[in-house]
Length: 179
Image 1 (spheres, helix red, strand yellow):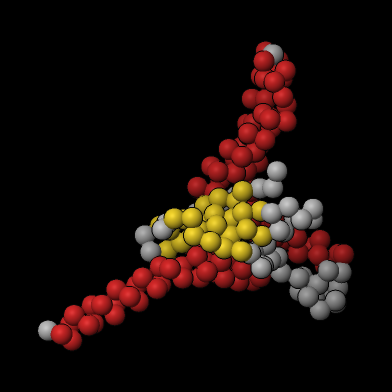
Image 2 (cartoon, helix red, strand yellow):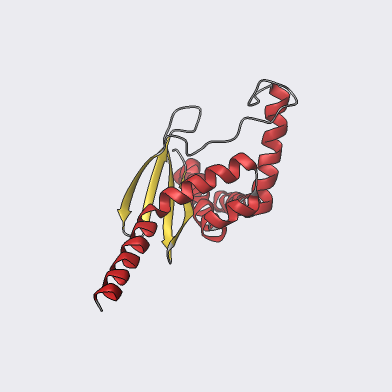
Protein backbone atom coordinates (compact mmCIF):
# COMPACT_ATOMS: atom_id res chain seq x y z
CA UNK A 1 0.00 0.00 0.00
CA UNK A 2 2.83 2.37 0.86
CA UNK A 3 4.46 1.70 -2.51
CA UNK A 4 1.29 2.73 -4.34
CA UNK A 5 0.95 5.87 -2.27
CA UNK A 6 4.59 6.77 -2.95
CA UNK A 7 4.07 6.13 -6.67
CA UNK A 8 1.00 8.38 -6.75
CA UNK A 9 2.90 11.15 -4.92
CA UNK A 10 5.85 10.85 -7.32
CA UNK A 11 3.53 10.98 -10.34
CA UNK A 12 1.70 14.03 -8.97
CA UNK A 13 5.01 15.79 -8.31
CA UNK A 14 6.22 14.95 -11.82
CA UNK A 15 2.97 16.27 -13.32
CA UNK A 16 3.23 19.43 -11.22
CA UNK A 17 6.83 19.91 -12.33
CA UNK A 18 5.83 19.47 -15.97
CA UNK A 19 3.04 22.05 -15.67
CA UNK A 20 5.36 24.47 -13.83
CA UNK A 21 8.05 24.10 -16.50
CA UNK A 22 5.43 24.34 -19.25
CA UNK A 23 5.92 28.02 -20.14
CA UNK A 24 9.64 27.51 -20.54
CA UNK A 25 9.04 24.41 -22.66
CA UNK A 26 6.61 26.42 -24.83
CA UNK A 27 9.05 29.33 -25.20
CA UNK A 28 11.82 26.94 -26.22
CA UNK A 29 9.45 25.22 -28.67
CA UNK A 30 8.46 28.56 -30.22
CA UNK A 31 12.11 29.55 -30.60
CA UNK A 32 12.98 26.20 -32.18
CA UNK A 33 9.98 26.34 -34.55
CA UNK A 34 10.94 29.86 -35.66
CA UNK A 35 14.57 28.85 -36.16
CA UNK A 36 13.50 25.85 -38.25
CA UNK A 37 10.68 27.86 -39.91
CA UNK A 38 8.32 24.99 -39.11
CA UNK A 39 4.76 26.27 -38.79
CA UNK A 40 3.53 22.80 -37.82
CA UNK A 41 5.66 22.89 -34.67
CA UNK A 42 4.68 26.52 -34.07
CA UNK A 43 1.03 25.53 -34.10
CA UNK A 44 1.64 23.30 -31.06
CA UNK A 45 2.69 26.28 -28.97
CA UNK A 46 0.45 29.09 -30.29
CA UNK A 47 -3.31 29.43 -29.90
CA UNK A 48 -3.83 31.29 -33.19
CA UNK A 49 -7.56 31.93 -32.69
CA UNK A 50 -7.09 33.66 -29.33
CA UNK A 51 -3.98 35.47 -30.53
CA UNK A 52 -5.90 36.87 -33.53
CA UNK A 53 -8.68 38.18 -31.30
CA UNK A 54 -6.24 39.83 -28.89
CA UNK A 55 -4.09 41.44 -31.60
CA UNK A 56 -7.15 42.66 -33.50
CA UNK A 57 -8.47 44.35 -30.35
CA UNK A 58 -5.09 46.02 -29.70
CA UNK A 59 -4.82 47.35 -33.26
CA UNK A 60 -8.38 48.65 -33.33
CA UNK A 61 -7.84 50.37 -29.97
CA UNK A 62 -4.61 51.92 -31.25
CA UNK A 63 -6.38 53.22 -34.38
CA UNK A 64 -9.19 54.79 -32.34
CA UNK A 65 -6.75 56.41 -29.90
CA UNK A 66 -4.59 57.76 -32.74
CA UNK A 67 -7.62 59.29 -34.47
CA UNK A 68 -8.56 61.32 -31.40
CA UNK A 69 -11.88 62.53 -30.07
CA UNK A 70 -12.67 64.79 -33.03
CA UNK A 71 -12.61 61.95 -35.53
CA UNK A 72 -14.60 59.71 -33.21
CA UNK A 73 -17.36 62.26 -32.71
CA UNK A 74 -17.91 63.19 -36.37
CA UNK A 75 -20.06 61.09 -38.68
CA UNK A 76 -17.44 60.75 -41.43
CA UNK A 77 -14.69 60.15 -38.87
CA UNK A 78 -16.62 57.31 -37.30
CA UNK A 79 -17.14 55.73 -40.74
CA UNK A 80 -13.43 56.09 -41.50
CA UNK A 81 -12.53 54.55 -38.13
CA UNK A 82 -14.89 51.68 -38.76
CA UNK A 83 -13.30 51.02 -42.16
CA UNK A 84 -9.77 51.32 -40.77
CA UNK A 85 -10.59 48.98 -37.88
CA UNK A 86 -12.11 46.49 -40.29
CA UNK A 87 -9.05 46.61 -42.53
CA UNK A 88 -6.76 46.10 -39.53
CA UNK A 89 -8.89 43.15 -38.44
CA UNK A 90 -8.71 41.58 -41.89
CA UNK A 91 -4.93 42.04 -41.91
CA UNK A 92 -4.57 40.39 -38.52
CA UNK A 93 -6.87 37.54 -39.55
CA UNK A 94 -4.76 36.93 -42.66
CA UNK A 95 -1.35 37.14 -41.01
CA UNK A 96 -1.93 35.43 -37.66
CA UNK A 97 -2.39 31.95 -39.08
CA UNK A 98 0.14 29.19 -39.67
CA UNK A 99 0.13 30.06 -43.39
CA UNK A 100 0.49 33.79 -42.70
CA UNK A 101 3.36 33.18 -40.30
CA UNK A 102 5.01 30.94 -42.90
CA UNK A 103 4.73 33.74 -45.47
CA UNK A 104 6.23 36.24 -43.02
CA UNK A 105 9.09 33.87 -42.23
CA UNK A 106 9.70 33.19 -45.93
CA UNK A 107 9.74 36.92 -46.72
CA UNK A 108 12.04 37.48 -43.78
CA UNK A 109 14.40 34.78 -45.09
CA UNK A 110 14.55 36.38 -48.53
CA UNK A 111 15.17 39.82 -47.00
CA UNK A 112 17.87 38.50 -44.66
CA UNK A 113 19.62 36.77 -47.56
CA UNK A 114 19.37 39.87 -49.74
CA UNK A 115 20.91 42.07 -47.05
CA UNK A 116 23.56 39.49 -46.15
CA UNK A 117 22.24 39.02 -42.61
CA UNK A 118 22.78 35.27 -42.54
CA UNK A 119 23.97 32.94 -39.82
CA UNK A 120 27.41 32.46 -41.38
CA UNK A 121 27.73 35.63 -43.49
CA UNK A 122 27.30 33.74 -46.77
CA UNK A 123 24.67 35.26 -49.06
CA UNK A 124 23.40 31.81 -49.94
CA UNK A 125 23.55 30.60 -46.36
CA UNK A 126 20.68 30.14 -44.00
CA UNK A 127 19.21 33.39 -42.67
CA UNK A 128 19.82 34.29 -39.06
CA UNK A 129 16.85 32.84 -37.15
CA UNK A 130 14.25 35.11 -35.60
CA UNK A 131 14.64 35.20 -31.83
CA UNK A 132 11.84 37.35 -30.38
CA UNK A 133 11.95 35.55 -27.02
CA UNK A 134 15.73 35.58 -26.62
CA UNK A 135 16.67 36.74 -23.12
CA UNK A 136 13.02 37.27 -22.21
CA UNK A 137 12.28 37.80 -18.55
CA UNK A 138 9.44 35.52 -17.50
CA UNK A 139 7.15 35.47 -14.51
CA UNK A 140 3.94 33.85 -13.44
CA UNK A 141 1.05 36.28 -13.04
CA UNK A 142 -1.28 33.48 -11.91
CA UNK A 143 -1.34 29.69 -11.84
CA UNK A 144 -2.53 29.63 -15.45
CA UNK A 145 -0.88 32.77 -16.89
CA UNK A 146 2.78 33.48 -17.63
CA UNK A 147 4.34 36.56 -19.20
CA UNK A 148 7.69 36.82 -20.94
CA UNK A 149 8.91 40.37 -21.55
CA UNK A 150 11.57 41.00 -24.16
CA UNK A 151 12.93 44.07 -25.93
CA UNK A 152 12.73 42.91 -29.55
CA UNK A 153 11.78 46.14 -31.31
CA UNK A 154 14.40 48.46 -32.76
CA UNK A 155 13.49 51.25 -30.35
CA UNK A 156 14.17 49.02 -27.38
CA UNK A 157 10.59 49.15 -26.17
CA UNK A 158 9.48 46.04 -24.30
CA UNK A 159 7.09 43.56 -25.85
CA UNK A 160 5.21 41.14 -23.63
CA UNK A 161 4.32 37.63 -24.72
CA UNK A 162 1.47 36.08 -22.74
CA UNK A 163 1.22 32.32 -22.36
CA UNK A 164 -1.80 30.66 -20.81
CA UNK A 165 -2.23 27.16 -19.55
CA UNK A 166 -4.73 25.07 -21.50
CA UNK A 167 -5.09 21.82 -19.60
CA UNK A 168 -1.50 20.82 -18.88
CA UNK A 169 0.07 22.52 -21.92
CA UNK A 170 0.97 26.19 -22.29
CA UNK A 171 0.28 28.22 -25.43
CA UNK A 172 1.00 31.75 -26.59
CA UNK A 173 -2.31 33.63 -26.52
CA UNK A 174 -1.36 37.31 -26.65
CA UNK A 175 1.45 39.60 -27.73
CA UNK A 176 1.22 42.98 -26.04
CA UNK A 177 2.75 45.30 -28.59
CA UNK A 178 4.92 48.27 -27.58
CA UNK A 179 3.03 51.55 -27.32
